[in-house]
Amino acid sequence: MVLLPGTDARVLGLSSRTRNRRVAARAGVTVVDGGEAHLDAGAVLVPANVLIEPALFPLPGAGASVPLAPDGSGVLDISTATARRRAAWTILIRTEKKTDGWVSRHFNRPMSRIVSYGMLTAGLSASHASLLTLLAGLAGAVLSAEPGYASFLTCGILFQISSVLDGVDGEMARATLTESEAGARLDTIVDQVTYLAFFIGAAVGWTREGSAGQAVLWTVVVAAALVLSLLRGARFVSRHAPNASFVFIDRCVRRAARDSGGLVLRVAASLFTLLRRDVFAVVFLLVSLTGQRALVPALVAFGVLLANFTFSVYARELAAAERGATHAAADAHRHGARSP
Image 1: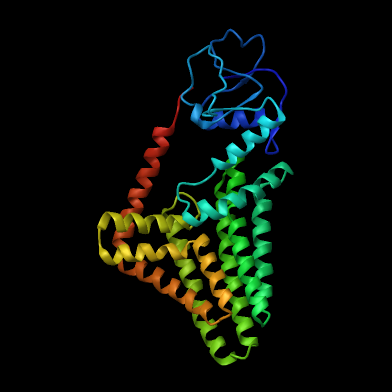
Image 2: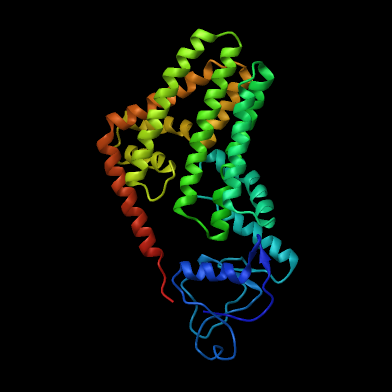
């Protein structure tokens, strides 16, 4: 593949030639910069005013020039400022994950893409987005430690905001093709830290509202169980998942429920939806609207019991589902590989 000479425009803060190289490299295609020596080499020619996308592969015939597809499938026009903005939003929309639930797809993503667009345009990275998510989460946790309805409601709103921001780092990484195991691990750590911080903050606020004895007991018991459950989940993910994301657990539970056909496991898989970050944030916001802080440890305790019940009772089914998910991922990667 030959990148023809021309203006090296920037899209989402990234050089167009750099992005084209990354897309081609991911498809296993050799890329060279254009020049007279390469024009008759029988390579596919890529004009400077386009961005190539993974959907372009397999490549057109040797010696062909990559056209501008009217529907933007595989190739994006970046010849004008308007075209570059349109290409940027197309790329961000395509960062949506197949594993996204209804809340993420229809509520969180439309907002997180705006943040991703702004941060990438400003030259920031996915790590900066993870830090922003952490700061929003910790700010909400600090506010939740204050007694009163207003602080608890603000805590719920900030938890929802941190849930929206949670998708930004992944969007930014996928848009710039900079996904990494370290990035996935950082995202998971930020998730777990904010979960614990919000829980502890809400418990402290509950104590300060006059429920000291009951609140302390509930907090100690549920917090210990939560930490142990997170460690158990992290162990499962580190042993079996392709990356550090806890979404792998939800995927395995759903696959196990589908493969086994057991009624109880199907019910557990349905309830597992409530433990997803996007859905849990909405539930937490609804709880904050009630002003009843006692519902927070009850909600967390429900999640802990559900997760441990599923892991303990259906360990065999989850192991089978994990093997199936791993094989499916390997097949997808093998079928997705393209030759130059």
